Length: 65
Image 1 (cartoon, rainbow, N blue to C red):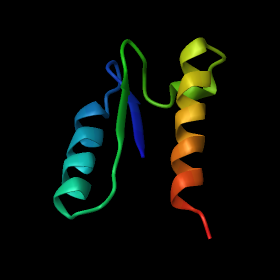
Image 2: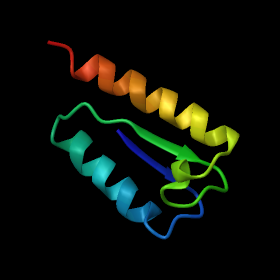
Image 3: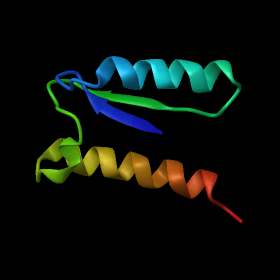
Image 4: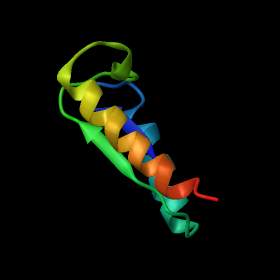
């Protein structure tokens, strides 16, 4: 799972990484947040809660024993 924001200086890198993973047949998710910066999850804002819930769900689905 790749999470980034539209104001991130690394957004294009995140998109290319997602495209490469998808092209390689990997189960990849790209989650982009409007107006957010790279690693916005360190800030106590509503988008952080939404993002962390999505990350948690993704990890729980993919790390099952």
